[in-house]
Length: 219
Image (cartoon, rainbow, N blue to C red; front, side, top):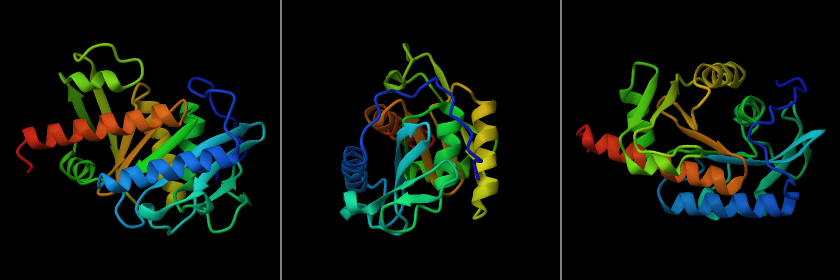
């Protein structure tokens, strides 16, 4: 697992939310994403940093329907992905959330399973989806112009989550300016300094994925 490493401090915002606040906000986000078709059935998982020392993360429990998710469907995990409070089993992809928190200093990490993200992840074979020339790129933190070129790395999916977390860390190092990444045939991971920024990044990237997909004739 993550062996107690500390996250980088480039994104994390303080003060951090209490568990109840984080869980309520993440649950509301999950329900909104479900309504938009980005988190069908039990797909997707959501987390927010509660503290850095020690590292604690509120994360959705495994197997919950995202259309009915509430605060009771979240647990707290430590830097090794072990549950320290709450009921239920942490998401199977907890190690990926920790890899993003550690690699980007993110305050919140959101994972969706949209049609367009899945389509583009399957169609792309050169390492990354490239987004450019579109106004909504300015919805991404630090981007000031539609001329920005955003590379969204695509990682081959596997059920070996330890290996997948290592691949996520490698992609973050290879694409240090990216705001999200795609698991092939699986979905989007996006993050931000806090939940509001992470949610904005998901909304911007999902819009951009659909535009690129439609322009390419993948209707």
